[in-house]
Length: 630
Image (cartoon, helix red, strand yellow):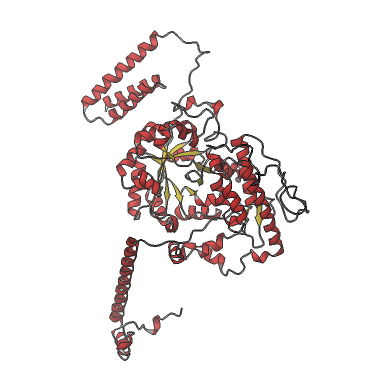
């Protein structure tokens, strides 16, 4: 133990002298690991001599160097201590709400839009993730790197060595310390070295690195990453441990549940033992996607919470469609935080508390029934203004206040007396008969490329009934801000018409014909269909609202999903197994009744004998006491 302590002390001494020298620092990291794992005294003696020689060499080098004036080379500040686990989570403010990593969909502008609906105090309770980034492509391709992560204006030519070298004057968008924190950067990977190299690029601009172990898409299967690594525990351990040992910020992981609670617990324990400070658990299996998405199993998350150490930080993911679901999930799973993905795509205000009655203003709509939500034109307009301010870096156009039915009538300056669009309207795209003066330049900004997909998610209920807006949005190209401004104007006009129609006939939108809607919506998981959830989430088409996917049985019934031969065989086997189980339970109940009251059973058997055997009802007839109407 004495020699072991001597080695570690020597490593610490030398590291204090060589901070910032990458090669030597790397050698010392290796020395620390080998010394800590040394099994024979000879190994320790060898490293003792190595450390001693390095210490003497460094000391002599410093002695021969001329003193440097303090004014030209001030001492560097001490390196910040790396926090992990719950200490790290608490240093972020213990955020309860988490914006999920989504491929090409959780970019800077969308994160800013999501934060903008929360108060300055509440926005600190929101932790956001970047979109998933492919680690190998990020390290090998500078253009890919610049197009997917933009923390500085000059780009990321070489990975900064430490937090002390962060170019503060060059900060741009992603991970900006004043407006985009806390932030985790998520990578998908299957090569530990490539993952570490990619992480070093973004390390100074985020709070943690997250490993994607949950992506179930076909591209992840072909690339061997995401949820398709969950059988290779050794590789997962190496990926996480590589970052844990070599980064100055924590590493986290996002995973899915496995086929059983017990197996999921073992999986989570392995991920934590590798060095993960936070685990996000999606309560669905790998094959639960698309029409097979179904419901997430919160009971598995509660099972993990009760069996993992108290210091373990767990984020829950799945079944979060509305703001109310966040608190319900926290209560049922006992997780530290709740993550929302698809719910946020359709309603970026999901993390914001609704305003008090009477304080709705122009952006929030509330109906006679008390149900409400943020207006689509308000969210769309705010999204555009954020793009102007941060991405395009120019002031947004002057806009008139959002329409309210109580406003006095004002003629729209963008229309003529007969209601048709004015040809010289500023900001309108040219008509088909006109030629564009300049060909639209192709943009590479991730924030502009994501606009059209985001708006199709946001406006889904609206474009389902307003096909001209759907067509205009479909023709809009990334970077063509004038085209999107035109779509915004069309949306504002449609919302105005919807609000006036509601004032004329509120019953058309209040869902008064749906009985027991609130009662059935309290626990949608008990319903075998999505009807109760749809009832709870439904709003007028001009209000932001979640998209409720049909459950598996509904998708099969509608014909939107067909079962494969393998799934059909499995379903048939499960049906046979279920019938056998029910028959065995009936036989057990019959045996119990016979033992408890043999004369009564004999009487029932006598009554059954009087029934014609050919009608097939003799064995199925039930005692009157157990019959239930309906």
